[in-house]
Amino acid sequence: MNENKNIKTYSLIGAICSIICGIYFFVHPFSYGATIISIYYMVLCVLPYIMITVLLLLRKKNVIWLIPSGICLYQTFRQWHWFLFDDTLDCAVAICLILAQTILFIILLCNTIPALEKKAMAINEVLWFVPAFLMFIGYIINIFNYYTIRNYFIGNIMNLLQVIISLCIGIWINSIYPKPEVKKGSDNYSSSIAPDEFYCGMAKHVLLLLFTFGIWYLIWIYRMTNYTNVVENEEYRDPTKKLLLCMFIPFYSIYWTYKTAQRIDKMAITNGISSDMTTLCLILAIFIPIIPPILMQDKMNNIIQANNTQSVSKQENMNKETFRTAEQLKEFKELLDSGVITQEEFEAKKKQLLGL
Image (cartoon, rainbow, N blue to C red; front, side, top):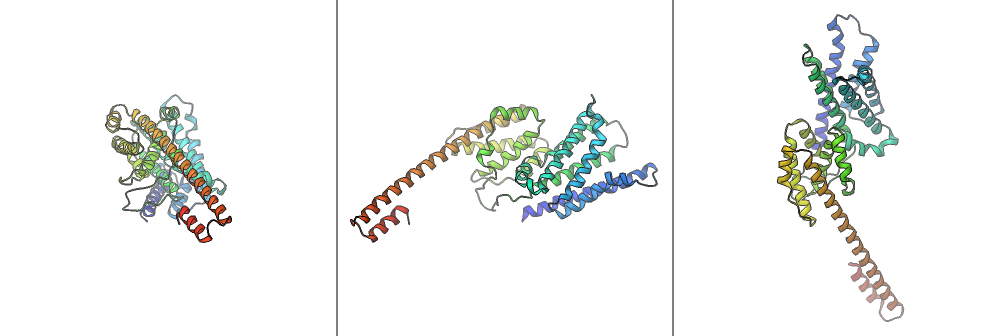
């Protein structure tokens, strides 16, 4: 119930930001002396925000989402493609903004086309925040690039509102498919990420940390927060909230690293693996922040491997027990058929073996 209320709140915030952008772009040409607005301008700059406002308020999966998203992608490419091969900071801005709109369009496409719904849940969980993050990085670079230009304040406000809109759309998208229910007051929570899915080879993990410009690190924070909710006697942590805090609150990622390392230590000890890396990860998070994710993922891989080994061992024991029970039932059936025991004795032994 609270989760649905939060989604409504985020959607309302996104809708308000969207209508503000729509009003701004409608009024903007008149500030330069225009007396009439072309239909072409209305379609490219005003219509998308009107549609996004309505769609966020409705919160329905609908192929109509592709119209404003496609228009925004076209408009962004039309405005910024000139800078893609430039040797200035404008090139970095262009890449961030075009990539953000492209990823957002792909996410909406997967969620509104029925044939792609199977892939949508995995895509949502990994990419829902990426468009907003790329927009934020692009606009931050743009602010530093044009900080000497006056009267750019309102433009920066509009850019910030567009980041918020993208983030609210992402939060709504990530809520489309139901997550495992978490009961309040319970000390043990279940993660929506299976252990095998969270396993990541160290070479792959390190390369992604180095060459994805921080995107993989944020994805990893979301997944790690989700998976470490399986720790007993620990408070449930909302992966979305923790990710947003790490993205926008300075130094919060250091606190997150400390608390998550504590949980990993507990998980390791529970699985018979010695682990005491909480203090080390805290110190490294302050001075060499790229190292803790490597140490934590390596330890998590060891925990997952230990879990898998224990699961295989338990399954083998269950199979042996089942086989032994079947053999004993077969022996008693032969005794019944030969008249050594009665039907009542056979049924009693059967119930005893089956635990009935």
